[in-house]
Image 1 (cartoon, one colour):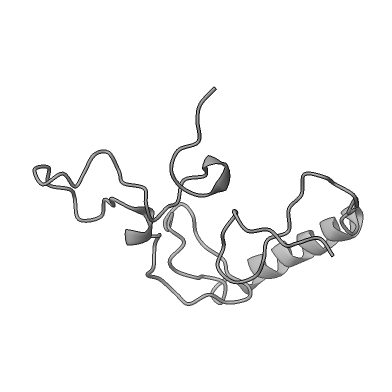
Image 2: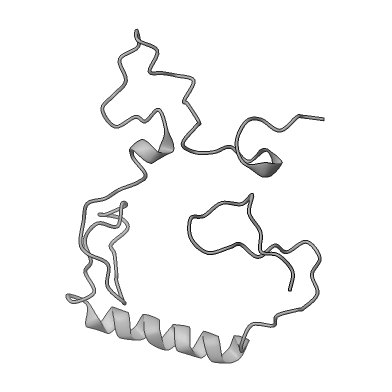
Length: 119
């Protein structure tokens, strides 16, 4: 059985303490967009601002940077119609109570080693 490594409770690695084994080691030159830690480059940060409804051409824009919803209102309307129909067929989600393994996280920073106390 593997022992939990350093990090958060249960062996979940802390992303800010993780170091990519490929470097930086003082010798290897990393490409400018490689990251030693996930927090250094958490994801794509360019592109259009987020809106309630967005549409992307995934063949031409794999990183979903340019919203084309305004240029294709017919496609947006059709997708909304399909979603509304599916939502009606599926119905509201069923929530089962009493799960012993579910933990409620406290608000604030996202940390899995802190759980709410039972009332």
